[in-house]
Length: 316
Image (cartoon, rainbow, N blue to C red; front, top):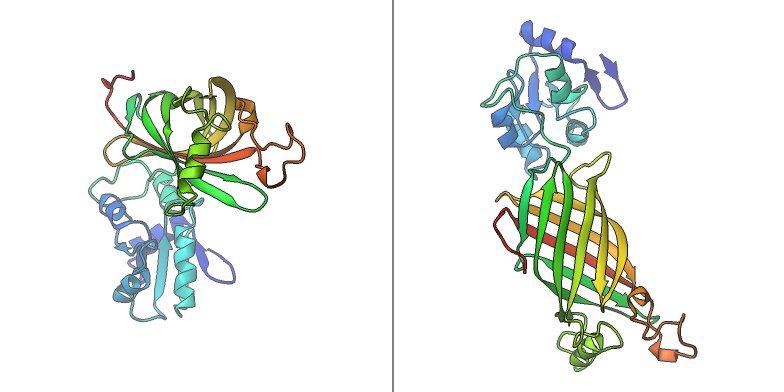
């Protein structure tokens, strides 16, 4: 057993010995209730640290704040049990231990597990995608844009017409057709200047929608990053963006996850230098003495793509 200033660490062998000896302590699983039903340590009680009612759950299990509590989480990488220990100490619990390495270390020692699916793999911290073809749900997908000048910031949305994504051994490829004619300026919604700016964005000064009503984002290759945790960007994407009839390369990161319906959801943020695509209006690199007409070159995009698993969907 090792200690720090806050709580003690128990090794899996120590905890197993204490369970075998039927020693008195309260063992708490800090993962979700659904996960607990599938797999948990013998004798464990469930109190999910991610729930806002976590402290109330623990109080229902352990009213005596001097009682010995042993917490465990997913693995040594995950801070679930440590977070639970810190919360309980702030609440006045005095005798707290944490299973070193969590459920993962316990499983590696091949100790007994209980639950509906005790042999299931450890809870995923990395994404594993199913091979197949996915169709973009245009109703749930959108691009948010923002641009600036020295005095203000404008932002809005652009719709997505359609698209497809393919997964092959966790490598992503795909095409997304962007409806440039749907570009809208939310920052001036309700203002008399709203239609003026929207019309300007669609003009040849910017996106030249009359001639180029669509833009195309092509994912040439999306590769998982080395440590693809689900809550941070877990894919590196090499892409091209065809805008105003000009195609140029892009590289950016995305956060990809599975949806409950078996599809994919992806979000990405990247900036483009609009002048690479011929939109040079108000750029100080091309014009002098711009005054109030100066517009910064960078445009920021926040892309949200939601797909369904429909391999037969056509893209035309």
